[in-house]
Image (cartoon, rainbow, N blue to C red; front, side):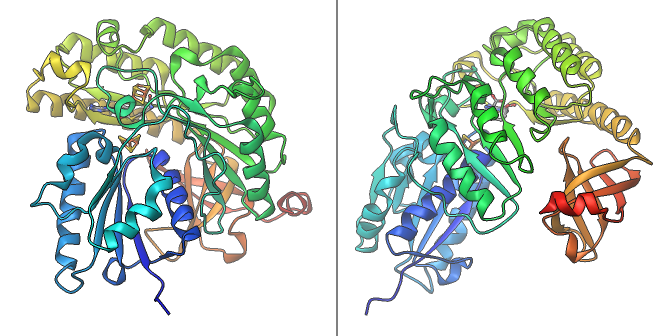
Length: 448
Ligand code: SAH
Ligand code: SF4
Ligand code: F3S
């Protein structure tokens, strides 16, 4: 009997990649491969990669170097690069001195069994065609049982922000059907999942070709599956966020009051150069409409510091906008030029030390704002979905509020996977600390 081949898979980048890795494992599992958590015992080692910034790629190159070392004790090891770097670098990754045997882009995962098989016979393989239709709608991702699941509802991006590689690595926008998304999530609820996050680079341009439903319709359909299921989604592009969508979030208790709404910059001149297609006043107006409809909403953003030609004045406008919106959190990045994007031709004229100084100013200001917003919660009792042991300490558990804030509290094994109330004792800018409130009869019923 041929021993079962073992696959090791490591994932970098955004949640879309996390979701794709579950599709990859499902495809390989159906072809008879078994998953392993230990690279040292694998026959096939795969990395699902991210190309969004230079430092993401550098880290992955480092990892590939480590895989190469494993060949000393396991000369037959097949090493494969999947995802966005595969698409960006293509056959360059297969150069003779590299250790890579397989290069497979995000729309070619159905070919994995065939290509892996050939690679195990010693034949290098590459598959990097992008598709206008592939959305893996019929593939059930391989998820281990758990509390929270990522569900990809659309692929690709048509926005072409000038700094971004995603439209080139992921191809054109395409959506799954409402019918299949609802089917998949219904099965997850039956397995005991308590939370789903609907994923797309720009979920607001979701469009079901079958029912013609938009993202608000999809969200509504998912929220109706089970009133105890928490529904999240990411990412929303400010240009496509409709009033219908805002009203849908406001109307359903189980659609979380948390919106990740990346602004990137507070300067209209920079936003234009970025091709973000909105101005800061359009953005602030949108935030106003969201806050009016969903008063306790929590907002987060992405910011890029040091985009080409960014002046101190442009930077100051970003700080002003952070103050004005008062986000609960921000993901902040130094501009990283990416070959073949429009911004690449604009040069990279902001010196590294200026980029770093601006980035630090943004981080410091946002930390202060997040702290102020978290402080309001001290003494309050809030509901969380308990996730399990904290990464930092065995003695603690963590859970998240509807507004996506992490709460740390003393371990209670019976609480795992449950909705529970916690009273907040203290906070910092990133985390809330509290203690579990006793379970009431009503809450017991709600936890089913
Ligand atoms: N589709 C999502 C996010 C995609 S990438 C959106 O539209 O918001 C996540 C974030 O990475 C972006 O929001 C942006 O802030 C950052 N990013 C993308 N390309 C970058 C680059 N070349 N340099 C620095 N940050 C970048
Ligand atoms: Fe990139 Fe812009 Fe598309 Fe987001 S919306 S993935 S930043 S091109
Ligand atoms: Fe990175 Fe690709 Fe996601 S470039 S951020 S893994 S879509």
